[in-house]
Length: 463
Image 1 (spheres, helix red, strand yellow):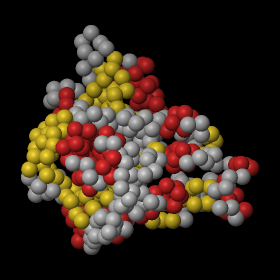
Image 2 (cartoon, one colour):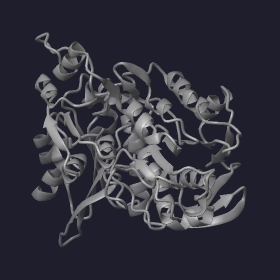
Image 3 (tube, one colour):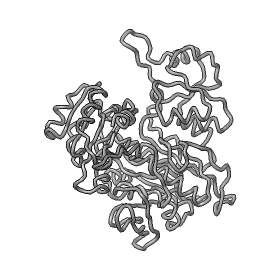
Image 4 (cartoon, rainbow, N blue to C red):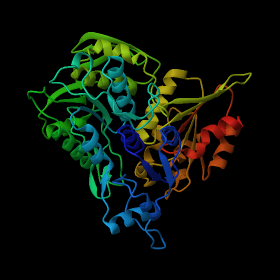
């Protein structure tokens, strides 16, 4: 929603917004753009008299224990019969019309891969618009409109300006339960991976596969303006099932041994192979097999709009990732060795495991990794994946869990880890455990999809 606000402001609209407990980096971006942020959802905001209310999916018809509405402003909008729409629908109608949309979908890696595609296109002179669910360090902002006409080698009447968007499978709004991405109508769709998530709105993996197929249905087939393309991870059986439901577009695969785009070499320095032939070289600072796969997906998407893989690979050499994706928050020097603190958005067990595997590959087998995490997503709060916690923390020497607000027993879920796992019910106690355990040479990774009580800065100050 912060990105949408930025796009609306850039389009020339006067924009205000309301939310609860907004935290960096989005709070800082909104402030820098001069967008007024109102705390809470009070009905008195009707006095602003906007032309349109754009409603995010955090808003619901829920009631508090007292019986009062949790989102009083929404009730007031409904009572007064005022115009409102969802964020994805506003975006589709006011920004995406007339553009070649490149949509990046998947359980993991959406934000990073979207930022990669945007940076490739930027480096190759296409001035894309984009909307990313984070702040790409190369751009310093999460959204922009980009060029209004096709640029570079694509500057002809049959081409459209480019817009790259993170395509989320979560529902659109309380009044539109379709996945957000069905609004975007991409000509290039990336299906990066797919596993069970969002247990609060999906019953099982098959439910999510069906939503992904709704996205596939919206991608065009062959036509006078060029064919649509679906870029799919060849390692994912779930995505095979999605495509077997029907696909009407050109398909390009990546990742598997027999794919259109594969990699040869270590994740930080690898050759890109297109149909088995060398097509480019990626040398960068990113670690982990997951980022290698993200790169292949981005290169395949960029190739669809005319960027040769060699140029795309070269552009990725200067890619700086996204805030809160293994972002180095600080390094405290000690005589016996420094203590390094990272911030990462990982919250799904697979993402936590991937993050820690990547760091383990970087620091080696003897360096201690301390994993600090909170099961904060709706899926994790429900306890749907608590049994996977020991598995996903395997590469951590010590794990520290913030269990405040959970309805399930984190200590029981982590019991198989023995004294490698510590659980605290509040941030202060967790911080005390961390300070007692930390040693020179440690790498500490804080993982959450929220602000995590600003534990990163508190930890650095205390150290």
